[in-house]
Length: 87
Ligand SMILES: [Zn+2]
Image 1 (tube, helix red, strand yellow):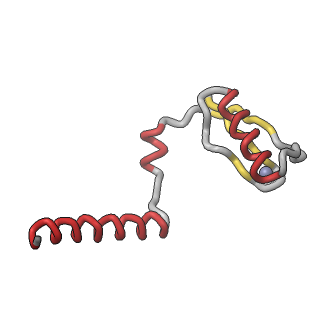
Image 2: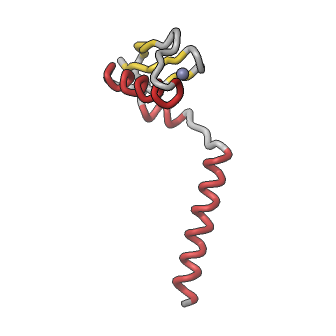
């Protein structure tokens, strides 16, 4: 079993939490950041089947931001290798 925080007002579903309190904590942070500590109508904690992290990772696809970050990291590695051998 796992729990997610769901905010109907902005259509947000949190990542799964193993404990109910984790999803509640997510909800508290969401309310503070997005709704000025107000309680959005229709927000709720939902009980879902636990998704194995390995299974979830298999469905992961890199976004454009991930690709840019990987390219920058790759260039940084190339630069540091080049720097190590030329100085
Ligand atoms: Zn919200």
